[in-house]
Image (tube, rainbow over all chains, first blue to last red; front, side, top):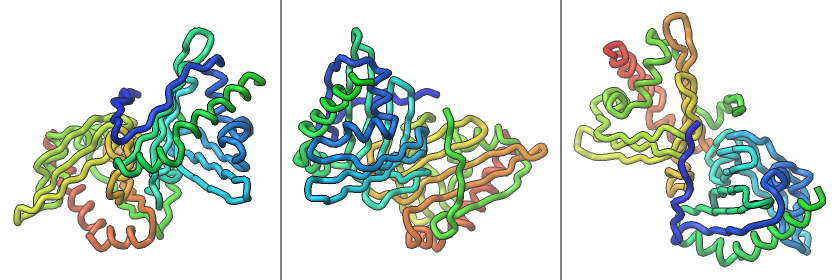
Length: 160
Length: 160
């Protein structure tokens, strides 16, 4: 299967977090694709991920339930688009499992895991339909939130 | 790559056209995936397909321009989700090329091509987000339109 070479990134529409981390791609991949692992790091504290469902194939479900400090819950269900072990994971909330168009499309995520010495060059790209949605995501704290979650991922992956 | 086994079909949300045709899967596939071929059959007359762009890989563009008898034009651009040669083609207009969430999601299409004697068991499934969208698509003439287009495809494929 030949995939599109993502990006080109469009800075008006896309948000990017790129960082070198000192755990290898295999462990970052495991943290992203195993529900019991993902619940340990996915949500920046004090939020927690209290449920996670993963069917790791194109069209398969990626569902999470995040709970805030006041008990408020945020449910998200989307599906995977590309699953390339230890290399790349693409999922979207614009499609529900089985590729059904969803009620509230927000973004598509492309996560790339590239070997870098004994660690990983980690790139997370959030792709939006327009500039307003990108700005909303940015103001919700994309960079800080995804950065903190990655810190948690790395701390957790070191225990694997 | 392991794919989800589509359907289950949900009759409240999905529309299905299933028919045995007397041309082999390879030719039906060629008619669906080659722009110069697709323009010959894709739109029920008197509408015509005047432009078509295909980048046949997950995330790649599937774009058509259909023109009606009064010169009105209907532009659609989506992307492919699954490309399994001679077997299955999945595309959606809920995502633009590169998986960007689109402005006006309408449906995802799963087209299956199964060998049947010397011909093909052809199944086209249109998947919608809710019952209202399914009903709209039905009232736009899904069964008649996709049926006529398939007649045109078969007549054209016999000339290949």
